[in-house]
Image (cartoon, rainbow, N blue to C red; front, top):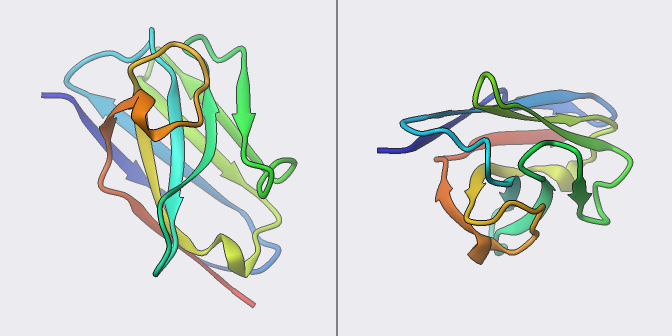
Length: 124
């Protein structure tokens, strides 16, 4: 049974940084895209960032481009999200997802496996 486990969330002041990790187990996802999504209280889950199977291409939501960086280590079956210059509006539960496709999709329908999420809270 494939499983994704996120870690690294927490409380940080505006302007600070956090690094989220997502460790996959049960199967390898080295041939598939990996993504990060987030859901703020009272809002729908939205796309944050995605990375292609080999890590050569990435795609970001406009709201985080230039501040967040997605990366992956296929040898460790792990994907990361480095978040910098955090803003209060980045407060949300962050979810890791493993794709059905190899390219860096922003669409939730292209992801088959989801983690349980990790909370990120940014204070002003």
